[in-house]
Length: 168
Image (cartoon, rainbow, N blue to C red; front, side, top):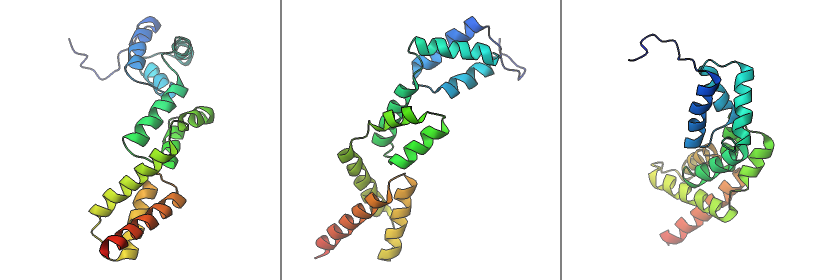
């Protein structure tokens, strides 16, 4: 009933096409992910390439659409900055054209509001009392989330001004 030996199950190109079509229909995928999966099914490079071309023609595999969905999800839900999103897309092997297309999904005003929300949440959690060290720690955190230094500085200055006004 179960495949007890650790050798991966191999599929014919027809079986692999059915399985990979379901894999692509479930969520957006990159060509790199699909190729790795097809190779794990025991297909050679040519067979995998033909299936990828067919999936692309049938609109089951579209890297531009993947990039757009990835950007939307990561900037809205994970609240990542542009730099981190671009870095992740490059690691996934997405082309510059698709990355640029995906980055158009970011609304500048909403993006800045995300930055402010992440900053305020981190500021509430930060235990550091020394204002300079505190600011540095928050800045490092925001940089790690992928936000740009100039925006971080503006947001930190606004946050500091708001805190100073509250204290008066």
